[in-house]
Image (cartoon, rainbow, N blue to C red):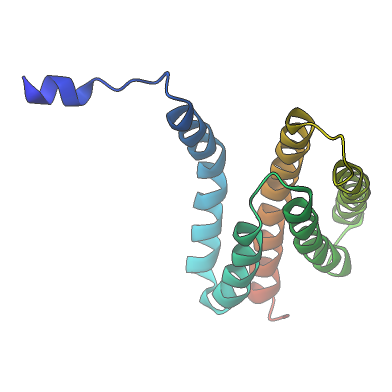
Length: 150
């Protein structure tokens, strides 16, 4: 009887929905990061450092979003500098433009009169950028480590 009650989970809970959404979005990235770090243990320091920067500022405040965007800009700079072909360079340039746009939006949201809805919308956009850029960053570190570059 107790096991039956334990098995019933109320998925209407807002925090549970958020956690499930995060896990479903983060799982592919986590798998790639873990595989890359396992294959190239020498990059784990760089990955942990960048991950700490991103996690430290994971709030929907304009200040936290600006700090996250700055950390992502560092990663895009590395991706731009180590682009191996035109496609990687174009992707890095596109991310840089999106970061510029998000930075302008975050600065506007720092002004009085911005709404929580506007901040949440921008935070979702930044979170999407963070996933894509961080995955590419880790992959590039792995490629560079495999090729003997740093």
